[in-house]
Image 1 (cartoon, helix red, strand yellow):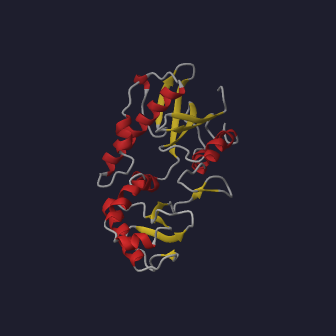
Image 2 (cartoon, one colour):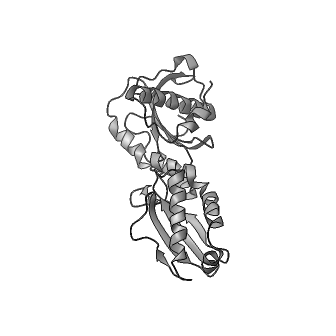
Image 3 (cartoon, one colour):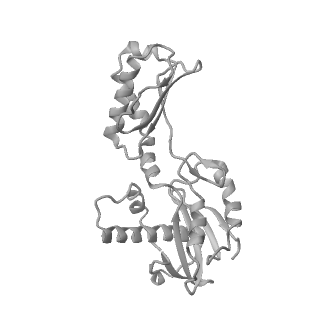
Length: 268
């Protein structure tokens, strides 16, 4: 089977400006690409000509040894958080550009400083750069060793900006981007990024009537399970829920690393 992984990556940030029909078509194409990538990694022998997308299920196909199987897909990571993550790796670059314009005496005064910054997930590059310039201006008005929030009213594109000082920091001011996004990982627990395993349970609860064929649930994360405890808990999480509802088996798939994180029950 062939799939366009580039197509999947290019559509991480959303589908603004599209009509409803074109958005639905893109979503269907994207889901097929995700499924084909998953099936290849999982070792499922799918007959390509059998794949249809009746919705529900998202994918209907013939698999050697299993016959006709319907797959429902669910995305575990939050779309807005993914947009924020697009810029996460470029934060140091943006901050270095800002530091080059910062007066030397201001930089020296805050050599032990670290600014913890949380951007609005929808903030584009221009807004981020402008917000960092405003942070630099705020530093110029602060004395050495000061701490606390930098703004009474946050500039556009910023959710928070907190100034901290550390004796171990000698080459500041540093900028550390953090996420203000928090979702449930398990009941009573919170993950610091947008990975929500409870979306799996929501899908199980949603479907109460079968589709007339074997049903499986494919949960996927675009950027993977970023913290080891999430990856370690995933098999137990699935095992406690599958078989569940109409679904005989559940999967968790990391799209970017093309890795099966968990499958339950095994050997079905």
